[in-house]
Structures are given as C-alpha cells and as structure tokens.
Image (cartoon, rainbow, N blue to C red; front, side):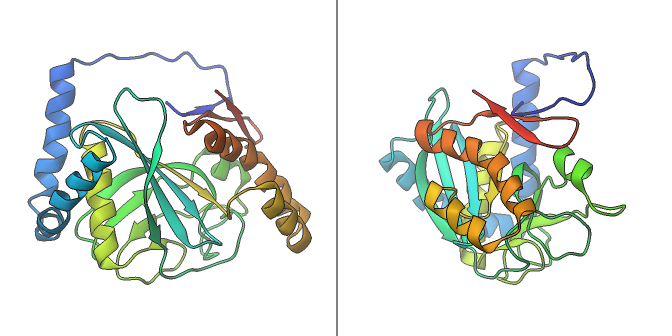
Length: 253
C-alpha cells in the first residue's frame, strides 16, 4: 500500500490469499477485457511492438510494474516501468496530453473543470467509453475529500481517448491504445498502477516561477508535493505517501 491515511488509529488486518487464487483473478480481468472489440484491436495493433520495445529496454514483458507521472503545464504523461523485483523505474515512453482544461492547482469541488493534482491509482478500465477507451483515476483520495470545497469533491476523472476533455487527461486514440494495454498488463497481474499528477516538473527553478505567478495557497500545496517529486527524481523509486488528519501529504521511504 503506497498511501497511508493517518486519521484515526486503525488496526489493519491483512488477509493473505493464495497465489493461485490471485493469479486466477488477474487472468480473469484480461480475459474479460479482451471480449471487447476495442481492447482486442489495441492488443492486435500495439502489444507486439510494445513487447519488442520492453525487451529492448531490458524489461520483462510478462512481469513488470508501471508508474505514470502526469505534468499538467508540460501537457505530458511519462510512463516509467521496471521489471518485477527491480527497485528502480526507468522512463519508457512519454505521451502528449492533447487537450487541457482548468488551470494549475488541485481539484477542490465538483464541476470546477480542474484536473486533480496529487497521488492516485488507475482503478478501473472502461472499454466501452464514449471517449474510445478510458482508465479511471481514483480521485478523490482522502486528502481531496478532507480539503474539498462545498459538499462534493467531484469524481469520474479519466485518462481517455478522442482528444477532448473537461477535467480529464485526454490522448489520441492511437496513444490511449498503448497506455491502455501497458496499464492493463500490469493490473492483470495484481500490480497497482500508480499515477501522480503534478502542475509541472517541481524543480527549484519551476517552483520559483510558480511562486511568482500563483497564489500562496497553491504554492503551499505544491510544496507538499515536492518532497515526493524530488525523491523519485533522485532514486527512481516511489516513496510512501502519508495523509494526515488535515489532508496534508507527508512522505517516507
């Protein structure tokens, strides 16, 4: 578990299931998805070449972890991958976000048109999307719920095709095929697909630029994201994310 919510003292009960049961569930996800013509087409047109590229990068196509990093101002999604058992991710591909909505800063309420910022996972694959193929980002997380404005933080934040958006991360149909296949392959083996969304690369220089152009409330929020950004830049591995009772992010290795 990457995100730890420190809101109350909770006794965590870990239920260990058998390896065979886990593998059966994993296989069932891909089998179910491949019943859809769009997913079949994505695999037919993309998986063969992606496997070649993965092998060229010395990544095992049959067992890998994936991490997505979205940068709103730069309008890109970076795909970082590592073989199972390795500690460091390597940059595999970069995809352009082909349309934008909202402005830099977190999403705080339903209908504000904002793309969220923070630490999330891909938790649902929708092959019947109105936007060709879509993958749901598990917004709102506990921080978003605590810091929301009004009664509803909103939801249904997707990475999808068709290159149109209101508060989502849109790709061309060609590129969403690749992303969908890569993420489904990881998720199919019960590997979490983490996606972190930042306003831009949180270098010291960029943070000074943000400080000069945006209100203090946003800059204070971005400063809570920066330690995790810096940690990944240095180590190419993911820190654990801690959310305190006020909704603030903290991190540990």
